[in-house]
Image 1 (spheres, one colour):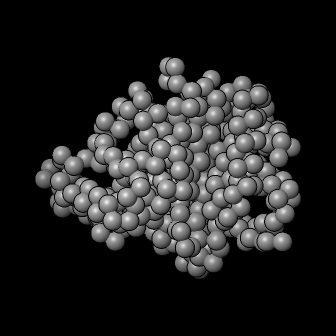
Image 2 (image 1 turned 60 degrees about the horizontal axis):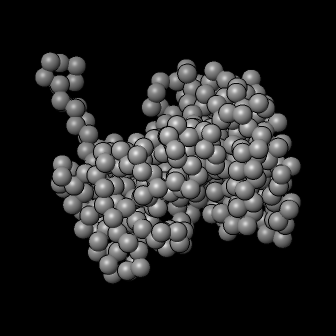
Image 3 (image 1 turned 45 degrees about the horizontal axis):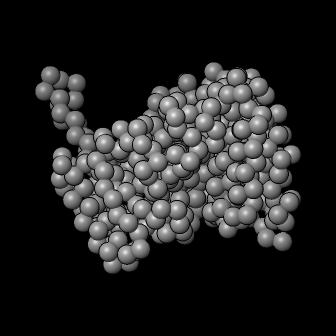
Length: 352
């Protein structure tokens, strides 16, 4: 029997609640498909920071490096200044563990939950591959004359050929393995960001022409991409983009697939520790009420299994989420699902 060691970071707010349901469903899948998941829990998040004034000890980073996968609930605490936990935990893990791919499937399971007119599951089924280690998120820049009328703030977007190319190669390979339309769209802003996206565009066509001639190459400005997400989402198969644009368009993607309650993502190091999480935040106002939607966390667990090579089990979880969503769930919004958080987890687990 195969066995996998998994680090679990429940985190803040409703994070531990949705993570429990993901673990419940993962347990059902492991039992059915004959593998074992060994969990190690890590106390990271706002409460720990308030106790210790330390977001993420270096020793913990090294421990997490030894796991093939990390299951994350949510990070974000109302009593901690914005940016401290996000930079100190999330960005630090993404950077130090070289999770250079943010993978975001955008898939509509039930047209009842789509805000777009006349769009259904056949229209909304694409994936965004976001570069996850560079761009504006490196924190390069600074202030001059801060706090004065002459204040200058500079934040630089860092794009290296190495970083861009490894992201593009992952996206091309993913498009090939997905084997749907075999079309990869580069989302950028070549008419304004003439340095950064000159590099992206040249690398895109060079890598594609040389090593992925079977993949159709497409380009769209980021502003046009957001329009097409709303008007013609069926045009997309796989999209690849930089860190900032990826952050923005994936939230729009989450809305057209039904909202944050169903959206899951992965922070991927193809050769190392990767982290999987629901896209929604910690939702502190719902903490302990048992009303938060766990389906996104459950889908994140399925993504984790797929990354580990347990693709049959991963598909079984997704199929059961689709079944439960279509046949049982009244709404994907917190408190309106028709079930409690744990009851919804039980429904998916029993469907497995």
